[in-house]
Image (tube, rainbow, N blue to C red):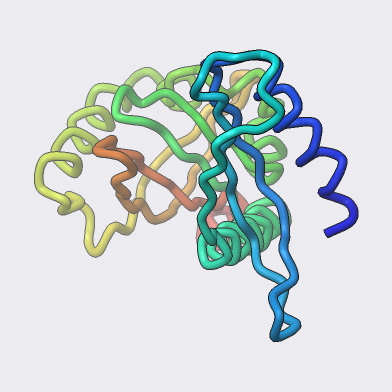
Length: 199
């Protein structure tokens, strides 16, 4: 690919100038059958001679990996769009119950920006009288994969806005494992108006 040529040449020129240093670069090649493929090349001046006008070049076809990475980026982009535009609040916490995701609806419901929420413990957004029970429920769910509520439904919950107001909420909890670490995601909604209508 013409856009990759200068970068490729620069990488291997540097490999010649710095003997013993391994440099890696990605680029595209046009195959004889007309198909563009992604390659990863590693250059190494193995003779440790800065005057040697050449390097040992190893390369491999990484097209499938690049396609998988692109698909992953697209999926992440779609997921981010769903999380960002969701009417329900979405909060993800780690095993220590520290918030790592706080979507715009959660910001609106709790009256707190994501930048202020992320890194905080979830208990910050719960009335104090419910915090101990909630922590027990999360630990039980982490150990068993079973919520104490029916099918992950979280009802009879109360949230705490940053202005000190309490409000009723309901939602669902799910657990995921990433690189051996547990994460919990709660999708919830403020049901204040519904409660008032029921009363």
